[in-house]
Length: 167
Image (cartoon, rainbow, N blue to C red):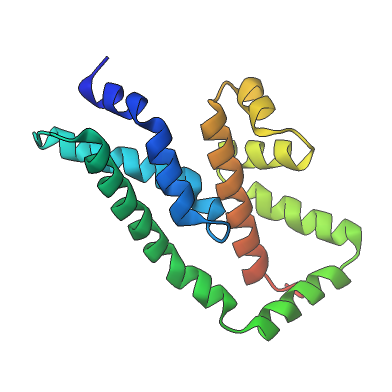
């Protein structure tokens, strides 16, 4: 086992706790991305030959800085979506006015434009499979399945927001 893997395994709970604390409920959907970014930042720093004297405090600082950086990158997108709630409300109301068959067709059309794995993950999730079942079904790890589902749902929401029902 490499030095990086040992370090991450020994301090996995600390890294996850920091990411969860920074995310709170508002940014819960970013948790898998943040955890991945933390590991990537640690790996890069270890590749640079950095010697770590106090692993817990060093990892805490890296996890905190990385978590905050991810949220800062995400925040402008979130604020942009929340900028004019009345406009967003009109889009939602327009989608609700569609007949169920039309809504289903629209959602299926948008899912069809996703990458193959993302589309499979989202279809499975929408039919009621959980992340563990998706992982087992497609041979993914549970974290990959969870990541694909969350990312696919976000892309679907974005595309539904961009798409006008009259199109």
